[in-house]
Amino acid sequence: MNWKGSAVLILLLVAGQGIATTTAQTTGTPPASRQIVPKTPPPVASSSSHPAAPGLPELGSAGAKNNCEGGGCDEQPSHITISTPAPAPAPWLWQDRVAWAANLVLVVLGYVAIMLALSILKKIERQTRYAETAAQATAESAQSALLHAQAMMRAERPWILISVEPTRGVENGFTVTAMNRGRGPARIVSTLDRITTAVDQNHLPETPQYDDGPTNTELASVILLPGESTGIKTFSRDEVKGFCGSEEKLRRVEKWEELILLYGKITYQDLVPLGDVETHESSWCCWYIHGRQKSGMVMAGPAAYNAHT
Image (cartoon, rainbow, N blue to C red; front, side, top):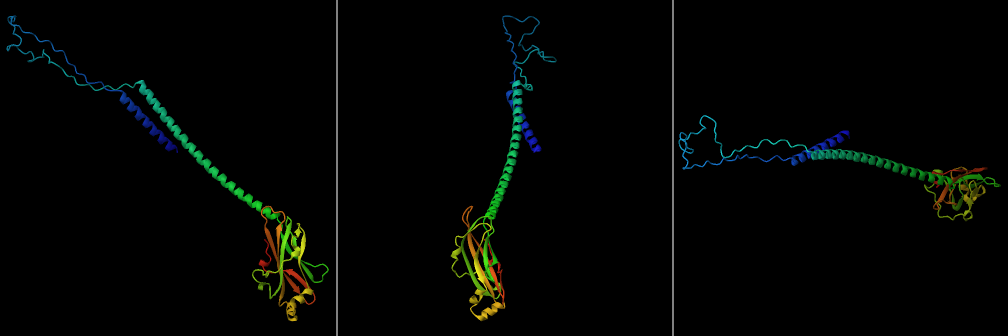
């Protein structure tokens, strides 16, 4: 920018000098041409009454001699023209000096104004860049704050997880238990479950099939505080024979040629929602291991049967 500023200053100085020179030329005008016209001497009157002196020739006679021969002329022409001399340079008047100084001051002030304008434009550009950076940082901070708030909401919401526990007072009996592992209370909306057999866990349908079975109304509107639990499904050894319906199927179950699988889901809501009421689900799947003398139950099934929302 230094060479640009210098070029602008030089152009302004040249323009000011040209204006001053033009003003000086217009104010000083050369003097007009002078013509010197000498006065013509009056003619000498000739009178016949006065005879010429003896021995002198008469004026205007043919015998009068011209004194221009061989010497200077006594007589001069009727007028003399003198050519105009070269005009003298016009003096630099104080008005012209004041005008030149004023133009120079204006040039300097114009240069200073241009440089100040360029500096202000640079500052505006920097401030605009800073404002854009600050706005971007603010947007990123707002996004981070939103993600943090969502994480806090997830942390404060209830989480119902499923586990299997032995049923008290029932031999070879087990209970599927739902426990609130979150930080907020939960209200159970509904539960669904089903019992089926399959060669192994991989032969289950890709998504759980409930055949629009009836929901368990006994658990509807049950509230679980953080750390509390409730049983949602029980199964014991005495129910195996009735479920199989035949000795052949019971024998295949005892040999583990077929597996007894229990699966279901529980739907619940946050008792104290921070925004819109959301419904969450927890799916579960268990394998009832039936032996000749003892039985057991463990969590099993594909991921689609053990999902949490």
